Image (cartoon, rainbow over all chains, first blue to last red; front, side):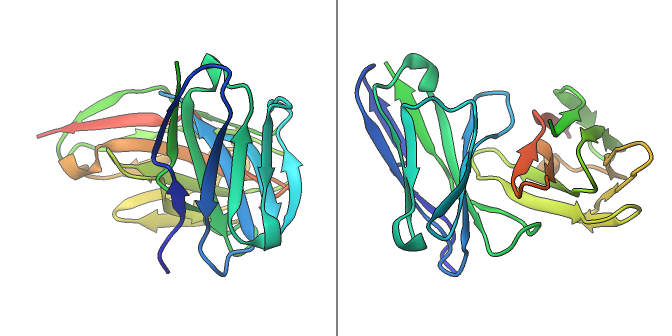
Length: 113
Length: 111
């Protein structure tokens, strides 16, 4: 068990550029979640997968955000045409069962200039 | 929709003081309830949980009791240490299978 891994740890980009983040969950976990956290706030739910199926996507997410989990293993989160308001910490978490604890990665800090 | 409300911080205490961080929730049905902690420079980690009414979760001297009648899950510790300084998040698992967090409460413990 090597934990949940996220890459990159930090990303600085210019407004209007596209960015992609990667999350590698704990290998036997079938549920994978993406959250966004800004300073002084709790993690905000973005989307989650069970295996390769995306079960829910937050209504707060614009069409610029997309997530995939091909083959039910790692996941990617892409943001197109980034805006300054997208600056935040993006967290990934995984779990093996509903109502069980989520294991969080260290996050990817996005700064949009 | 489902939501979690925590007392605002920051909370500043002296070492060995008693800690209470209030948490109330709104949810359909009977969600599982959690406290997560985020130490400086580290990722979120589970502190304790309770899955049904009147359950008490406990870990590292912290406790919280699932109170259905008051829809609350307050976090308590009898004697805090400097090493407890962190941000604490109350959370619930809703029927849709997602974990919903409160806004977090920062705790600072002074020697």
